[in-house]
Image (cartoon, helix red, strand yellow):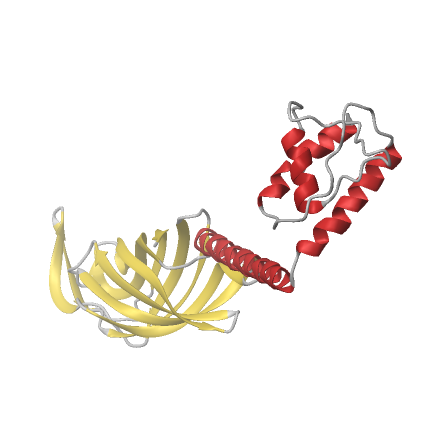
Amino acid sequence: MFIRSLIASTVALTAVAPAFAAPASFTDVQPTDWAYGAIQNLNARYGCLVGYPNGTLKPAADATRSEVFALTNHCLDNITQFYTQADAQLAASLRAQIGATNKRVTTLEVAAVTATQRRQLGVGNYGGIAFSGNAANYPGVTPLGNRVYESGVTLQGRLRAVELGNQYAVSARPYVTFTSTPNYVSGGVFGGGLATLDIPLSRRTLADGTKVSAANLYVGAGGQVGGNQSAGVGVVGAEVSVAKNIVLFADAKIPFAETGAETFGSVRSGRATYNYGSGQGYNVTGTVGVGIKF
């Protein structure tokens, strides 16, 4: 049974080997035997089956383990003679190509995973909407006294411009603010742009070994125009990635010059009329919002 299994398993090898001078046929192997073709091929191509001294193979007999080992060793010795130097070089070339292909595939897989992780874990680029507000002292401005409270909506974004090594980044942050009390302080609509240095507060390691910041402290400066708010502006803020597409941010924008409405007029409340006069100041605007990564 061992011989039958071994003969059947080696049939596939006969299709690729060169011709070989066939030894004498075995007297107990007939053309009607199911393994006749395999036996003849192994003899003709490789000379593997030495059989017994009396010229028989005994294909139906059980084989001892020693006989199986001897047969296998003899076949391997004979088969190796058909491998040329060209075959060895071709095999080495194929192994090298397969290794290089595997390396490239692995590199591409790591790059794809890294890109996904960087977008999902890092702060990245985003655009968002925020609540903004400020409070400033203006003499005699409103019926409520000298303090004006404003609220509004700010559209704000982050565009990472330059990576400074594997630590810091420089970003551009455009914004537009729509205020609720244009007659008093901010003049309705104003906007500008900021350049910031982003300092990582929390870093995560990616598949390629690099790191990405999941939370930043940012400081910088820029300018704004519109309404009564045209001035140079400083900013300090923080941002954090809370989901694969979501960023929360908050900052304070501090003008470098007095801003706000500088007008004269009156406000009527019930039967009373309140006069207000000049009212410029350092109008600090706070912003808290949520952004969508892109």
